[in-house]
Image (cartoon, rainbow, N blue to C red; front, side):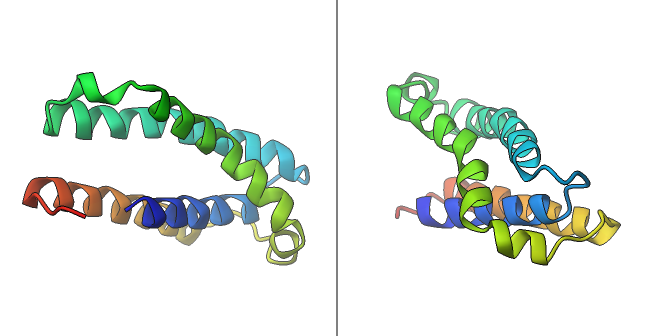
Length: 121
């Protein structure tokens, strides 16, 4: 699941950066990272706190390492794929927002199914 999650975060980051309206890609990556952090905290709270009733297992050092990773992940992708992002630069459209939302819903739905159905990976 960790590989799938990282891949989905990467896909959504790529979509966000290629439609970022400014020319400074780093600013777009920082903004994306600042959006990712509260989303990840909220998703962790929903899944660990509300669904699994495991809040005591949530806030360990590894959780904060994961949050740190999500803060630097957009920056890493911006540096690695800078040329590809600039080549595919587009204006923000409704379809781009919908694609990003679909990525989030896939991630959310996959995690929800795994937890609710008790699938062990």
